[in-house]
Length: 120
Image (tube, rainbow, N blue to C red; front, side, top):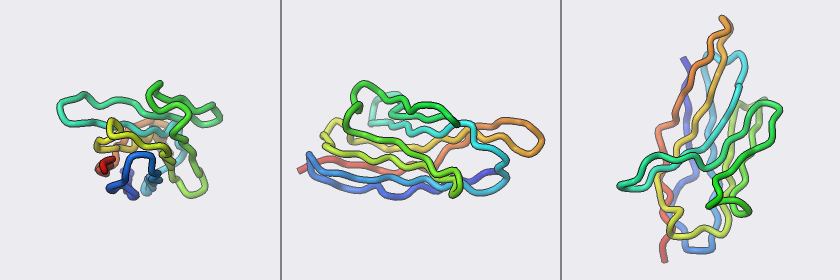
């Protein structure tokens, strides 16, 4: 089993910044991919940014140039730096890991979610 613990959400004014973190622990042999999703009330969960092992990051069009995803494999942690935040960025943000265990099986795990509210 793998556990994900998120931190860093909160209330910020438009134009402000926040940094989200998500640390994984447990039975991890290899991390295949890390990503951040978000879900606003009444909307479906959507991909915000993702990064694969050895690959380039990808971003939703709505956050390109403002958000940066990065990973620290040594710490099994993924970060999301969010700058120039807008009210429409308000949502619950979830981290997502695809992890291969020592038996070669790959599973998908989700964090508990952290609220990001952008409001004046």
